Amino acid sequence: KQRTLAVIKPDALEEHRETILEEISGRGFTVAQLEETVLSREMAEEFYKEHREKPFFIQLVDFMCRGPCMMLVLTKENAVEEWRAMMGPSDPEKAKEKSPQSLRARFAADILHNAVHGSSNEQHAEEKIRFIFGDISTD
Ligand code: ATP
Ligand code: MG
Image 1 (cartoon, rainbow, N blue to C red):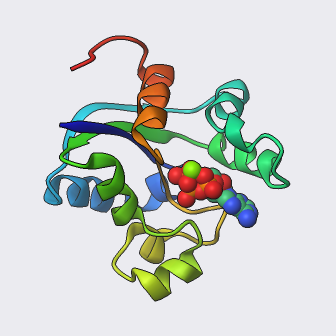
Image 2 (tube, helix red, strand yellow):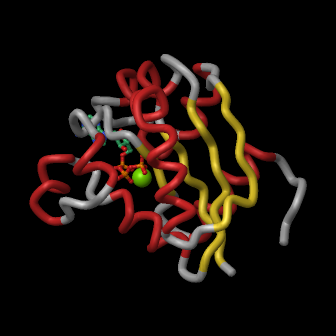
Image 3 (cartoon, rainbow, N blue to C red):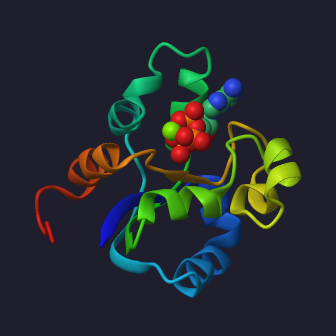
C-alpha cells in the first residue's frame, strides 16, 4: 500500500480535529503514525523549503508554527492522490466550486490558512515522512 504524509494545520486542528480524524478513518485510510507537535521555525522552513522564494513564505512559516500541528502517515491504495482529493484545491474558493465536500471547502479560511497539507507525490511523501518521523518503520 502507498503512504502519504498528511498534516492537520494549526487552524483546523484547533477547530475540527475530531471531524477530520473520523473522516480519515471513514475513507479507508490507515493511520500508521501520528504525532501532535508545534513546529519550530527551522522545521517549518525546512518542511516548506520548496516555497522559499514565494512571496507568502514568511506568512506560511508563521502560520505553521503558531500552534500544534497533527502529523500523520496515512496508508491506502493510491494514498497520495486520495488524500489530495479529500483535501481539495489549495484555495477554498476554488474548492467550494469544484469539490464542496472537501476538507478545504469546508474548513479553510483562505488560501494561506487552508486547514490541511498533503504530499504532492510519492517521492515527496517519503522525504517528508523521513523528515518528520525519522527513519523508523519503513514498511
Ligand atoms: P500543501 O503543500 O500545504 O499540501 P498545496 O500543495 O495545495 O498545499 P502549495 O502550492 O504546495 O499548495 O502551497 C503550500 C502552502 O502554501 C499552501 O497549502 C498554503 O498554505 C500556502 N499558499 C499557497 N499559495 C498561496 C498564496 N497564493 N498565498 C498565500 N499562501 C499560499
Ligand atoms: Mg504542496
